[in-house]
Amino acid sequence: MPYQSGEFMALCFMAVALGMDAFSMSIGLGMRGIRLLHVVKISMMNGLFHIIMPFLGMIVGRFLSSFMGDIAVTIGGVLLIFFGFHMIYSSLFGEDKVSWISGTPWGLLLFSLGVSMDGFSVGLSLGMFAVNTWLSLLCFGLFGFLLTACGLLLGRRLRGWIGQYGEAFGGMILLAFGIKFLI
Image (cartoon, rainbow, N blue to C red):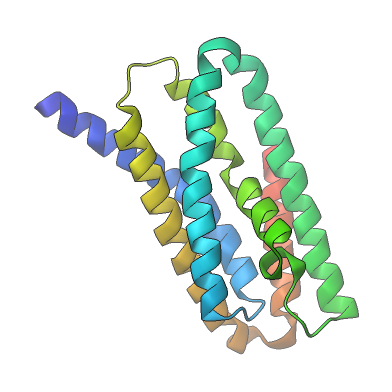
C-alpha cells in the first residue's frame, strides 16, 4: 500500500507540472476575453489531450524514447511560437472577433496539441517503467482540465486590468514558452 500511495503522489506531482504549462499558456489565451462556453470547451479539449498525448507517448516509449522526445518538444515549441505571433499580430492589427485559436475546431485542436506535447515526452519516459497507466492518465487529464480552466478564468479577469494590450501580452507569454521549449 505505501508503494501505491507513493506512486499516486508522484503521478499527481507530474500531472501538476504538466498542467502548469497549460495553466500559464491559458492565462494568455484567457486575456483575449473568451466566453465561458469557450473556457469549458478549451479546458475539456486540453484535459483530453493531457490523456491522449501521454498515452501515445507510453506506447511509443517502448521503442523510440530518446529520438521522439526531442521531436515532440520541438513541435510543441514551434506551435506555441506560431500561436504567440498570431495573438500579437491580432492585437496590433486587430480583429474584434474571437481568435481562430479558441473560436474554431482546428484552432482549438492545435492549441490543445501544443500545450500537451510535453505530456507526450513524459509518456515516453513512463512507457519504460511499470507505471499504473490508467491512474497516470486520469491524473494527467484531470489536472490538465482543472489548470487550463483556472488559467483561462484568471486570464479573463486580468484582461480588464491590462486593457487592449492583454492579447499582445498573452501572445508574448505563448511566444516565451515556445522559445523556452526550443532552447
